[in-house]
Image: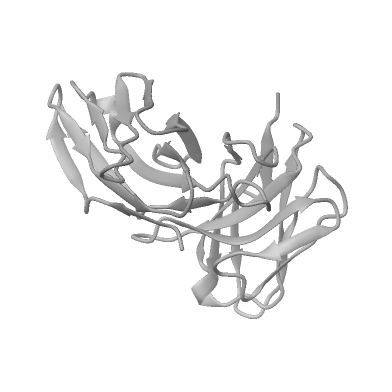
Length: 112
Length: 115
C-alpha cells in the first residue's frame, strides 16, 4: 500500500536551476494537488488537477508548472528556482468530492 | 473566500496537562473540517475529521466538535503525552466546489510536551 509517493525527499538547488518534484499515487484518485508549507503560514495550494489532462492554479502558482498526463502522476516543475521557493512541498490526492485527502511525506527543497 | 484561523503558538505543556488548540473558520457552504498532525521530520497525517454540524471527530484521545453556530473546531485532549509533541493544523474542505476537495489550512500550532 504505497499511497502517495513523493521524490526526492531532500534537494538543494542553486538559483536559476530547474527541477521536477515527482508525485505518484496508486489509489486511482482523480484529484491531485501540490501544497507548499512555510513557517507561520500553514500549507498553501500551488496547483491542482481534477483528472488526467486537466490542471488549474491554486493560491500560489507563480514559478511552478504542472501537467497531468496520467491519473497516477502529477509532477511539479520549478523552471528557474528562486530562494523564495525554499519550502517543504506536499503532494496530496483524493477522490473527487471525497473528504479524505492523502498526503505524501513531503519534499524539503532549499534554493541557495 | 475560505479561511482558517488557529490560536497562536507555540504551546508548551507538562505531561498529563489538558490541551486546547482553538480553530475558527470562514467558509461558504457546508465545509468538512479536519485536524492534521505533523511530527518532526515527517509529513502530514490526518488526526480526525467532522463532516457536518455537531459531529465530533476523535482519535488517539484527541477530539473536536464541529460547531456551526460559532464556526469553530477546537482540538482537545484530556491528558497529553511527550509523544504528542508535533505541529497541529486545522483545515477545511469545501465539498461544494465542483473541482474537488481542496484544503484551506490554518497557520499551524507547535505543541511541545515536557516530561
